[in-house]
Length: 171
Image 1 (spheres, rainbow, N blue to C red):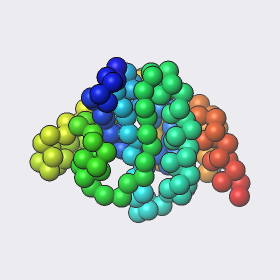
Image 2 (cartoon, rainbow, N blue to C red; image 1 turned 30 degrees about the horizontal axis):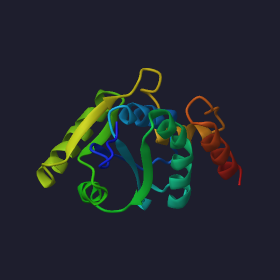
Image 3 (cartoon, one colour; image 1 turned 45 degrees about the vertical axis):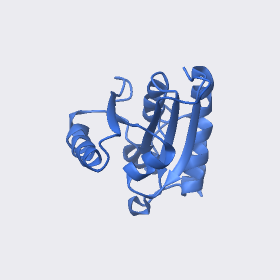
Image 4 (cartoon, helix red, strand yellow; image 1 turned 180 degrees about the vertical axis):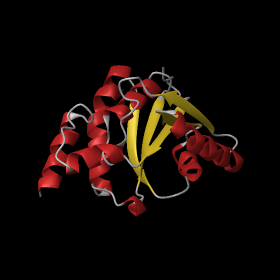
C-alpha cells in the first residue's frame, strides 16, 4: 500500500497493553490491512498500577506485532507516550486514531473520548474496529486477575506475553 513518497495513511492505536492480549493483536491485524503505517502507542499511565514497566510493555508489543507487520508488508512502530492522545497523534503524523470496541459497554466511554479528541484535533479521525467474536470478552484487567488467581490465560495472550506474565507473577 505504501507509495514510494512515503506513508499516506498513518494510524495510531493507543493503549496501556498491560498485558498485550490476543484481542489487541486482532485489532492491530485488522488496522494493518487498512493503513500504510501503524503506530502502537503504549501509554505510560502509572495510575493504573501496571504489572509490567513501560519498557517491557513496549518490547512485548513490538515482539508480538512483528509478524503482523511482515504479513502486511508495512511498518508497525511501537512507542511509549505520556501526553494527550491527540498531541501524540500529531507528533507521529497520524491522521487516524484506531480504537477497538468489544461490547456496548465500551461504546459510551469511547464515544466521549472520540468527541473530546475531535474538539481538540478535528483533523484526526477516530475509527472504531469491532473485536472479532472470539476476542470480545478479553480485557487486560481481567487477564491479569485470572492469572493472579491461578487461572489458565493461554488462550487470551500470545505465548511470549504468557511466559513473561507467569514469570513476573511467580517472582
